[in-house]
Image (cartoon, rainbow, N blue to C red):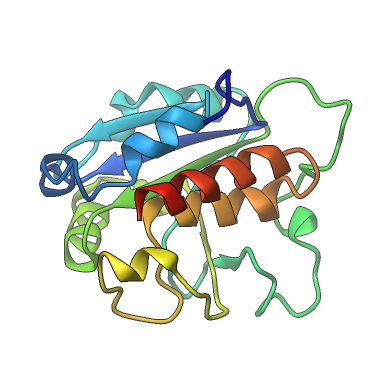
Length: 189
């Protein structure tokens, strides 16, 4: 673990299903909080965006929240289906700007089984309308598969998804955070 929590230009908001919260021995969410400074966790079945301070802060600062959730209008973080358009252009500002001050992204990650996540997104008023959906489109290897079976090749644990998203949103500034997240998961597995 890092001696101090690592700060990134990306805030992470994890919307966690109560069933996942109760599975603390299997959940990777507590591990994320041991590595990253800018992590907020809310537990529930549905969420009112007006009640989520990180979302309101991002919107008032001109930052459109990114919802890591697959869909037809989702931008591919790994670039596999963006027709060669750079991710920074698609997101309308570049996370590579070293002179930028403050948070450049709010990444919202839904933590639950796929059926729980679908219900949470469906029941969270305006989540899809307010956020820009982002997704991974290439198949990846999950080391967490040894503990919990994922339903598809692009599925990852919440920790792995956060690490992978950070590696694309902040390819130069989040390297240390990504390395610590992966090392923490390897110890957990």
